[in-house]
Image 1 (cartoon, rainbow, N blue to C red):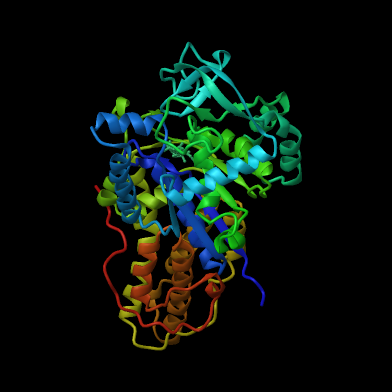
Image 2 (image 1 turned 180 degrees about the vertical axis):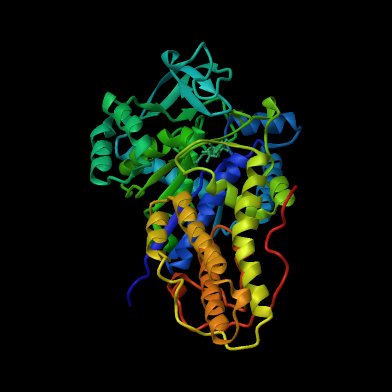
Length: 488
Ligand code: MSP
């Protein structure tokens, strides 16, 4: 039996101190689109998301809410799941770091790392940023604040265990060199590469003052640093070391993360894995950030955008489309309702919706045979779209699909089907319906709901990538409502 190609994609596991905003939705929707694309290709796909529940931040938030950490995080986790359902996220696994099975995996991996001689006891003295759960040296601080988020840091002086990250410099450089796509996108690779070349410092991996976390298996007074605990989610969710899913899906094909946590994923994570004798992932892709009114999205700035609200107001698929069409995955962008509305009106209503509407309107008034010879197939390049998706160029893929939609709309203008009848009209309709059927497949990972609506109107079954070729049209057209509604 030949095994199917497999695809394992992950999102970061999100902190549970608050409900998800557009930034969190971005990573999750992008990962969803990629997972759906690989399912279209027939790949055995596993898409993992989840929640990062330990650490000081969750502990403080729970205390503020007057709840135990577990009670508190349970509430936020349900909120995450509700949002992912509202955004039509097709995850296959949802990992929670408070799951006892996850905690056992982490302890087991730490024991292996210790047995490998990579953990030693020392004393930590430095600064800690609670919102980012990150350690900084005095030199790294910017005006005495966290260099990443600009918030206050707190001085830590405590006994701690350390991981010998410094030992892994050469092996990491070799990993990046042997796997040219490991650090993605290219534009961000240099920064990591230079920092690793400059030399790596060992990292503190335990705390004595935090109780809400995985107990350090080698010294029970200590709790494991939340980031080390969190990174292991990617294998605990697969049942490492013996689980069937681990055997089937590891190594991960893509860890999709925001740029601010690239270091943890591109440097610390592969070093931990190498130390534990586990193969590193194939690729870490660090995407850019959405700002809102030009600033980082933050509650205290009053500029946080609720993804569910956007989906309710402008339609879910217009929201998903806007997230991926506005800029390439590696770049930053500013999120605005005006931008969303413009895309909805000018691209979804005027191009995709219009094409479907014109096609089914003409078909509804035609009682001849819908058949002919392919004319609209020549400008369709499914292979190109697939290549772009393989490179995680979701933006480029949408551009390619939408330029084909434009071509199909131009075909209607050029052929003037309202002036045609009989076999000539049947031929034009054949071409349009086949184009629409294929477009529906290609947009389905981005806009699954709209694809279903298109299929219902042209009487097509959901297809896969292999169905994106012109063939005899055998659907039954049932004209329905407009796909998208124009917003004033
Ligand atoms: N818990 C850690 C990740 C551990 S993974 C082993 C964490 N969580 S987080 O809740 O802060 O989520 C961070 C992720 O959310 C980012 O890496 C990014 O994927 C997404 N985003 C959060 N805000 C964002 C924007 N404003 N723009 C785009 N994505 C951002 O870090």
